[in-house]
Image: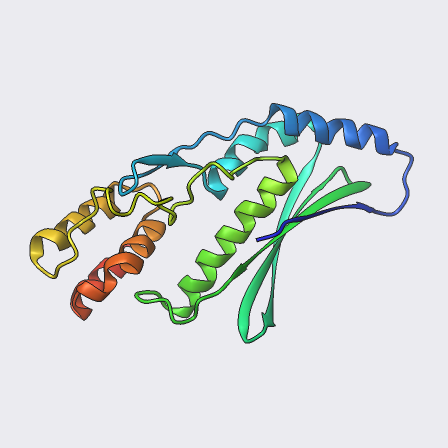
Length: 204
């Protein structure tokens, strides 16, 4: 969804804005967030919120900056929407970026807390993208196959034990098991029994 970036002025202290801007630019230019996650279904690598945070922490310390991320929830035309705000500050000046993600309360295989958590992670990642000028337009998200769904080596859509075990193996091999469970259930949850779904959810 659309990202909004705004520059805020916190109470005046004898620290020039140009100094703050220089620090922000330094972090944006130096930040290299690797795509350490791998989608076995679509055969592509991608980055998540944790990858960005791990890469930016040493740069924040080096430049004397603090990063804060917060969420707010509102209802828009009957849909719960999470707005994530990432704020970078030096104690005097700050710059913020926001991003939004809808919450699917009826997502199969996920309870309300998991649905909100997944949407929060998505919104937070894109608020960080906006703040640090990370372009993910050519990257695939963990739940986006970019048209590769028909050719990806995904588990067979059946209830037999072989396809279920393949799903379990995929989830165990994933660095983010919760996202892996979400992906498997979103695509193939309708083919699994309630007992199988419950078993997969234990990995989330």
